[in-house]
Image 1: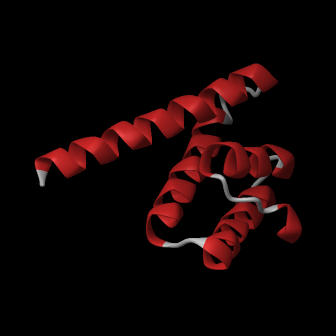
Image 2: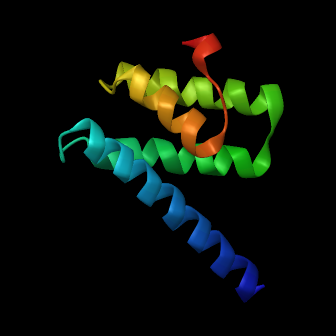
Image 3: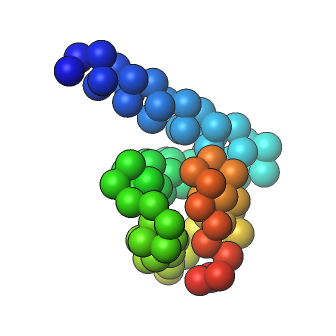
Length: 92
């Protein structure tokens, strides 16, 4: 059980680092980075539980909520697609 948890922590860290690298490359304000990382963690959680159209719909819901809060939908789409391999362009 500890080994499984350790693997998950490593996966989460890798996803967050990849997300942060994208954000820094785009020049996103450090004030907004925690919110994009929160979206990435939500994507990670969704992709652990769901696949296919269900994952797309669930991530679309989260992306829409974050867009309403002021995050850029393009960046959310890229994070979802490049890091979690879930294309949400059809719903945004």
